[in-house]
Image (cartoon, rainbow, N blue to C red; front, side, top):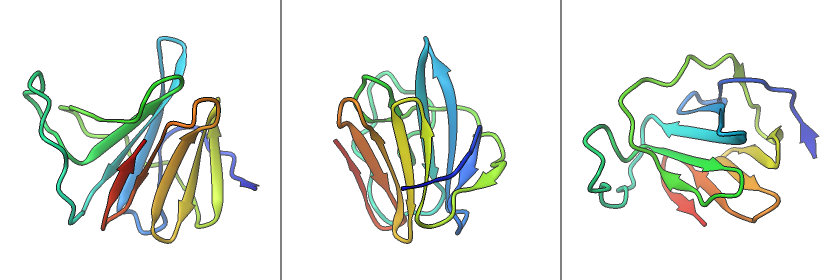
Length: 121
């Protein structure tokens, strides 16, 4: 595994996927936005009155979910090069030529996002 020491916002080499990390009640969270995509997001959550459909997040010990948001992500401070892995607690994010995949190594929950598709589990 090619571990990349990244602390804070990062992006894919293409710049199309931008991610940020933060603490959510003591648990690490990774949130990624796909700037340009051709897939259709799942239906908007009824309690979301803001932007929807291009951000997915994963929090330690939780399932990957689409994120309702009203603010821009912070500017990326680093690029996660293809084949590299960044870790945030139990979550590891891998940059691949087809997108970024983040996995909670403790629970198996994950998301995989790219221009062409998304997958959450």
